Image (tube, rainbow, N blue to C red):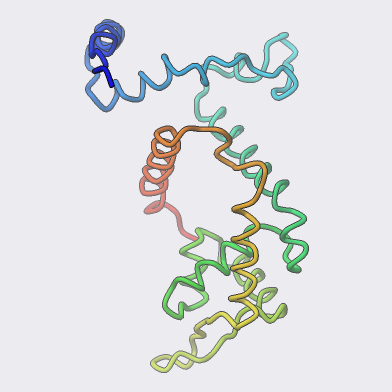
Length: 208
């Protein structure tokens, strides 16, 4: 197999430093993905973004407001996930993916308390307690008193709960539409690293 030349990378590096004199390797990697990847140059499907009264599409009208665009597109991704998994969750008696996330974490955590599960899911306690009550009613989790603190309840999956987690996990692996679409392996890794970074940044400020 012939060796690939590094010259194209060096040429892109020269472009990058001209535009970003203070940028480093990390910034260059992100810039390279954004500016040279054909996937990111795919024309926007007009119907996928609302038309503003200015005549511009949303991403053009709010191009100076990165936070707003981030809220908009992250909110959309969540709704797409709910749409793709709606029938699968309904078959298991669940109202949405939040209940599956709770169930999955209880499965992997060491007999967590109700509060620990809510914090792990970054969910307000009132909302989290409602989700846990529904899972108990469905017979998917058991609660029992903490040996060291009888006022606290700990949680375990029932056999039915274990079966449900496995069934949904298998169903998710067979979904025609992945939430990561057709991103390549490197792009998926980069995207997940970005999500983890944002999670780690914001979590200390969040109080469920």
